[in-house]
Length: 289
Ligand SMILES: [Cu+2]
Image (tube, rainbow, N blue to C red; front, top):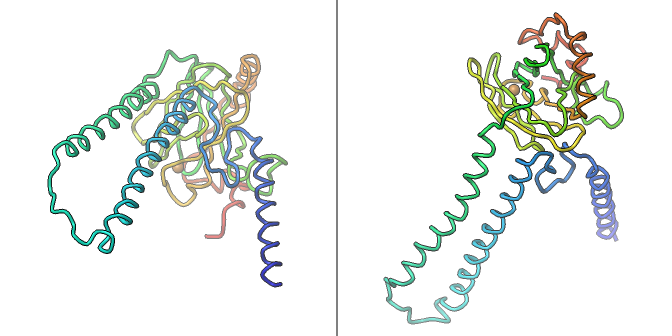
């Protein structure tokens, strides 16, 4: 009886978890509970990454299944009981040629789309606008050099201050805003230590290194909110410097730039190492040290 009540409890829990995952699946640009696959693509680059990933899964699956079948044949047909007098064969030229050639062909089949994808990611097309992202302990600063050169800081919103629908640990006070269907050139640097600018649904990840400017690009084809996180272990609040990108229409972007120019005019950038002082509310979100 006890067993059955436990079983029911497990089933109910699993149902609740799966049900909530189903609801959360509607969200684009952020992870969902029990997610098994990559986040949905919001850029052509991420779509290519996802299809390359699936292509590799088929190859990996086929190789694993092939090796498993060989192992099973060996276990069943060539164990000491079934095969008491083993063959003394040590060489077989045709088989050796095959097991050299076939992996080379597989690797070549992987290399061609892999290099094509790498060039797509690294070869920045003519940009429509440039955004500079600077990683700091522990927040991001964004500046728009070809849109008035204003700069602002983007700090995580504390759990208590979240509005309904805002994801925990991913929501920020000031999002990076970009227009839809435009090539955005992102210049990335670090102000203190190495951080990493990562937005999974855009398929971008690039290190933010002090004293050096790295570049990446994306062209978001869907409007909405897209979230990422610093992906280089950068200190105690590494988990609390999310990246939020809001993709809007061209006219909304122009309106936002006009507002931002005024809002952030002469705004003092928060100096590094002052996370708590800069945002008292954000400090309350941190777990006890
Ligand atoms: Cu960081």
